[in-house]
Image (tube, rainbow, N blue to C red; front, side, top):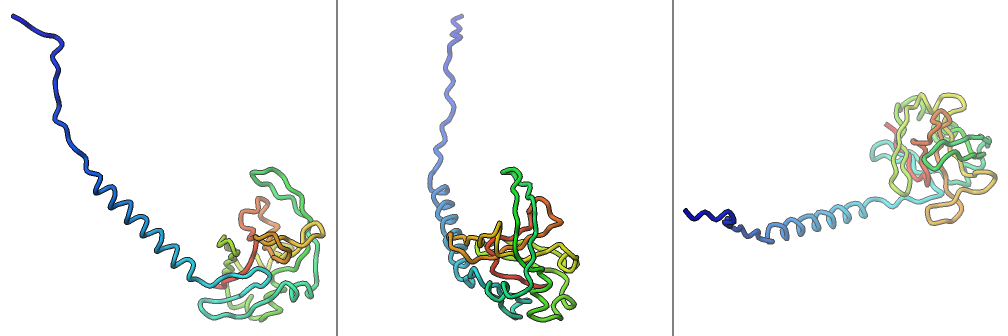
Amino acid sequence: MNKNPKEIVTLPQYRISNKPVFIIIIILLFAIILFSYFNLQGEKLEEGRIRVKAGDHIIGEITIDEVKKLPAVNKKLVINSTAGLSKHNFTGVALYEVFNQMDPAIVKNYNRVITRGVDNYVSGLNMEEVLESNNVFLVYADNGKALKSKSGREGTMRIIILNDPYGQRFTNYLAEIELE
């Protein structure tokens, strides 16, 4: 008997077509383009001006200059982030004071406050938090200097929540507040 231990076994070869992979890539690219188009069609948010709305109804707008005319407070805060501890001395106004300036009924008629920055960062809080003494502030300066906009210019605003030591719900470059 002649046994060859080195027999070569050949397996059937399957050819994988690149056509389905190519079609999937084209579909994904089309979806990205489509979603980008719809995202850009939204209203452009503008720093230095905050639009307050409920649903599709715009309740009002307030500019940084109008906010600066309200009674200012300074709030010292240490933020604990992944970059470490950072010390701040913010200048701003209690958010409920801003609402009272626009329409005193806001704090009675709505339960949620959704904040949005020009970078599309969105955060939310309850109206109880806004009404809580010494908690939620709309600030426009830090350590005596105007806050910088996303493009590096002066004149933006930010929401800070003193009872949120990690700053997870702070909204930089604030441009819109939606009430629910």
